[in-house]
Amino acid sequence: MVQSSKLWTKDFIIIFLINFFTHVVFYLLMVMIAVYTATKFHTNQSVAGLATGIFVLASLIARIFAGKYLDRLGRKQMLIGSLSIFTVSMLLHIVVDDLYVLFIIRFIQGAMHGCITTAAGTISAELIPDDRRGEGTGYYATSMNIAMAFGPFLGIFLYEHASFTAVFVVGSIVAVVDLLVSCFLKVPEPKGMEEPRKGFHGRDFIEPKAIPISIVIFLIAIAYSSLLSFLTQYAKEIHLVSVSSFFFIVYAIALIITRPFTGKWFDQFGANRVNYPLLILTIMGFFTLSIAQTGLVFLLSAVLIGIGYGTLISNFQAIAIQESPSHRKSLSTSTFFMFLDLSNGIGPYIVGILVTFMSFKALYGTVTVWILICLIVYYFVYGKNAKKVSN
Image (cartoon, rainbow, N blue to C red; front, side, top):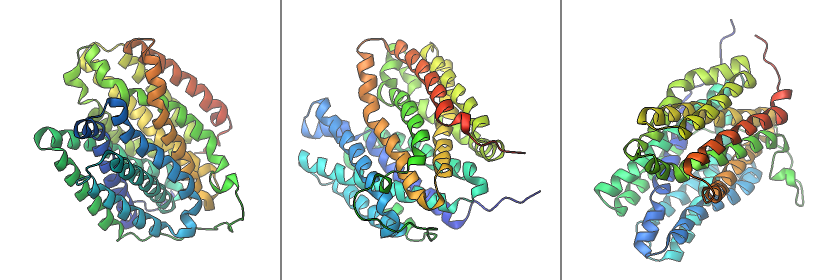
């Protein structure tokens, strides 16, 4: 029996923590910034929503250029430099007293978030052994999944029991810790860098081989945005508000419990044998949500979606890296997350249009059908040509 390469090295643990702390700050602010903007500056909801939207837009723009210049500027240099500006912009939230200045700060912080996550994702891809690609990418993604449950909980708790200032102070402390941890990271040298080319070339910003699987995650993430945007309102409609606050906690727990198995199965059996069941679980999860009338059924949908969609993100990211040349890991990583960012940006608007024509229950029924279509798209763009793993 061939012994697996070591995964949990000092540097992999550090990059895991960097990803966790960065996303704690991201989700801490994501649930509070619109409320803060509306309350502090007496704006309507559409203007308050810009404080969130401008962050996502900036992150997307930054990823386009981060992938191209990451290896030329230096991975650790970009990571620490971006984290430094990210931390300063977090601190500025405490003292900002002008709406337009807040938007500028949010744009800068969003751009730095795009650079940080691109650099960290690329470094993690270099640290993960090829024979444990699915497992390692899954564990790395788990750091974000934990933050996705912990960040919003922390933000809401601080707001309810303290103030907006407390939210920003705690966020700043987390950002400072994030920056300090990054200083101890040893970044491996990139292998086989391409010579820089003159002029503008699309391949300098996007990795073509990562596009097919990125399209699939883009389509599925549009469906997932219906949870981020309208889950609370749906819970009110079916009289399950008290249970809805536990949805993402249950989602994260289910994902964390199954992560040790799903990542290993990806490496052992190949992408298709894992991804098709995960897509089916995601379909079942949204269908269960669409018929939920009790808290138990409501939270069961969180389990199914958590295992299904939550694992698919890391699996698809692993595929994007596997399909791309080894010296273009930074571009394959940025390409994948560009599509994911774009989906997170436009998804709520698309779903919002649908809600004007149907009930929330019908919305989640429609989402169920949509993910079934995504399964078919996955088959044509990747599944039918995927390499089989011989056991």
